[in-house]
Length: 373
Ligand code: SF4
Image (cartoon, rainbow, N blue to C red):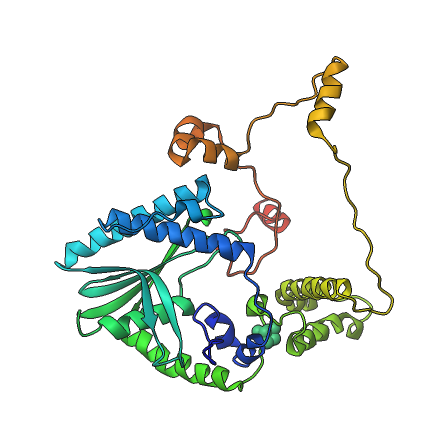
């Protein structure tokens, strides 16, 4: 096994913010989650469809995909169409663009022994375009200054600069389950400058296990997030805050606490989950025990229950319309829009307090209403 495998592009967001986390994570357990396996299946399907559309003859992987379903089929179709569109667009400005699928990208010049796989790389004069397919649903991934994408861009640039006259690196995240196509562009000079002044020196610290621990939102992707002392210290410092400001805290203090509250809640959940797993494995925490959680009653045999109710002269079934997600899967997005586009409404969401940087527009508050009057 390569000894430096802990520095990966996909975790670069975390180790660039907290360099010594790389070494700590290297020793931690790494089990593939069902989500990761689902993502691997979706990538295999995307690769197959794009290669096929390009006139190559890849083997069809579908029957070996454990997580294949209609959604995955639709998402990989969308991705395939997007990639072909981008390839066609590249042909408008360059007579011989190259398109590579699942391309090995080596950026070890800046990060020791580090490489990645670009889902799609289109190389043309002027613009190099790296496209990354994300099948995840949980976190919306933005391309803007995304270090994983910048590493991939560097890897592609390292191979193709000189063969093509590249001036700009375009990086796209294609995340169909979030309706997210996010593109970010950088000049070649800016990308190389970032690589030399930020990426390479921080990778050196991470590789050596030096640098400062730094807790923040990137901790959510860290394998030692439940037991990390730095994160605990940061959050406990906040937990003590209210004891120092008796008897009540004012709005300025609340404003100071708000930006840190999400981290505090996330950290608390991580500690609870970790402690539960430890307790189930035999660890005893003074004052705590493991009990059965609440559960709901259910039929032990649904068919027998329905038959008993029918025999008694009642209808055991209820009929209701499918939800919007299930209906979209049934009809496909286009037919859904044609048939039901005019019948969909979106009620206003529950008011939520978010940082100023959030992209949603602010809603009217009691203060605005008062101003209007
Ligand atoms: S939990 Fe956060 S602070 Fe701790 S090692 Fe991981 S990234 Fe760094």
